Length: 495
Image (tube, rainbow, N blue to C red; front, side):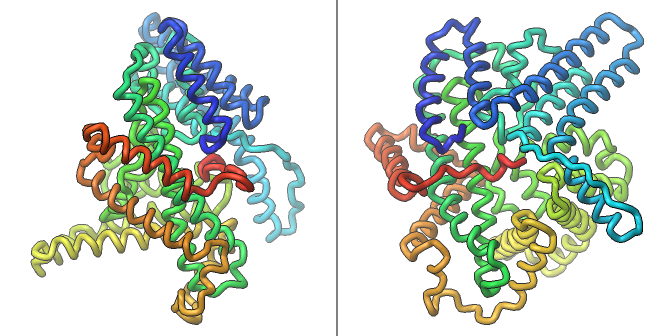
């Protein structure tokens, strides 16, 4: 079931109303049933995989807790339990997401030898959200192992933690310390909290339907015809894709966070004005925060973090980002994307002392605002370059795009009006431009700690509802939806 579908617009109010009408002691069971119904809307049989991952990590948590409470020499046994949980879950993830990719990669190497290729492959559909709920469940296992939380004894409550429908298929990847505790202590209905959540949902729909889905029409058309269109269109499509993926993914996360808040649950922030970052390292502290922090806590720090010298720190950064790239998809283009982002950070860390010396010698702190703008633009260009590999179907496709961009014939975009031949008319570009300005203003406010929705909700009733109604109307009028429109998946559903 998609957030941007009519079925969800009927499903969500029904779930919320019944949830608050039921007694607190059993209301979580209703949410569990609703979450599995939500997930089964894609492929009912794959709910068994969700249940399998849930059962494995639940039993692992219970066993870890038992070992801690009943065995004095439990350290070795606990490590084996964690290893078993990880191997089991990652084996499922590997089979459905990486098995065919591995076979294809092996065959690509064998083609350069005299050895026969491997013919084994499976035609399986990737279970939606498998990477997200697998990481969330494995994070719980590690938290119990570390003693940061006690194992959840109630299987159904733990099953809801893994399958909670707002963030089930595309995050945020929640932590057990946050969400499980809230599931144990559900809140009563609160009108102000509901309004706050609905405001977030409206903003999320604006990002998805008005901006992301509008941009996708242009980007999909241009990227599908690299050999036909001039490089200027590919350059524009690559820049716009940066905003498409941001608004698409942040739109999902915002709707998820808002939907959870309506029901009294607070999910972690997943995006914080990432394109206002002044370095790639800062970008990754503001982009997909739940995944970045997951890799930091459960991979980077266990690898040694920055505690074992600079060289080891740089190696750890590269390992994390290469794995992050592979997490995103079974394609070498994602690995290149992750590797570039890691490399940027290593180079940035190496040259930071030199950059600070130059700033001090040239007294650049006196031109702070222009320097900040330059940092933001350079960071955006570096990140946007990596998005080419993320968006491309293959590494070769990415290099074709890059090659075309660097060999554009005429940099003029609007002189002959051909810009409007790619699915977006001139009025659509005007709407997109206005929407992007609104996004920039909202991100600047957020970057400086100003909560726009809080300002709106604190305003008098006339101003408040004028803004809310205007937001809803802007989605209804300018959103890409309606007759002849097939609700598009969120980009991160494929991961």
